[in-house]
Image (tube, rainbow, N blue to C red; front, side, top):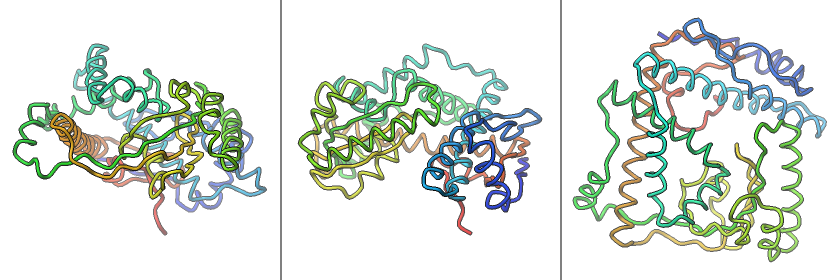
Length: 346
């Protein structure tokens, strides 16, 4: 049974903003104390203090206080992620499940195989600003959910053989989705960067964007000069990218854009991204090999969403949880959702 206790929501909008957004955090100090308690064990989220301090710094430069809904959205997202990590780690330990380096290496090889060539894989990870260490960490979390889904519900991840059978049965239902050819300037956040360092990178990105707004033809030269990662050598060229392959923030920013449009700066967990749209390609028929990969990836995505939600909902409902963060509560469905945490309308 989950005890979804928290401080009253009014604290988030009133006194809570003074404590979390206008007090020590406004001076960049880390928040003290756990964000939640799970079965008597405190759960910390060290990154929350820096994230809220960053909101304060941005608002302070405009002579304002942080928007209460932004404070709540950031807090809810980080608290949810911290709780998820804790619950999954506890479940793995309880069930005697261990995700080995070999497991992660095999998952990485399968992930690479989803791309037609090494450049496509590199461009994808570069667009996300994700290095191999971060990718392996994400794959390890995915494997943990797989293992728990198999243990609790006997669920199994779809195989390529299952994808081939699905294609043979329902080929008319599948086609290659729309794609966008992009070039990118990516400014990476250094590992462990504090909010001041990240704000400096954002200011650099704004300066680059102003140069591009005056002359888009500078994009390749500026990418070679400023962009981090392997795409810089090609003037930022990422190639064709499908929706859903990058982060949701980037997908939203690209929505409705036309050829030649500048997009950004887009802030993600890995850094700041600026894009230019080079080509738009609508849904189309593909080669048999292309079809098989699309079907396989679609089945993988469906499985992951279903397994993710079932496992996390079970863990959340069965744990004794007291949320300490002001104004934060979750229904089991909200906690288990793969979507971004949103503030609730009042």
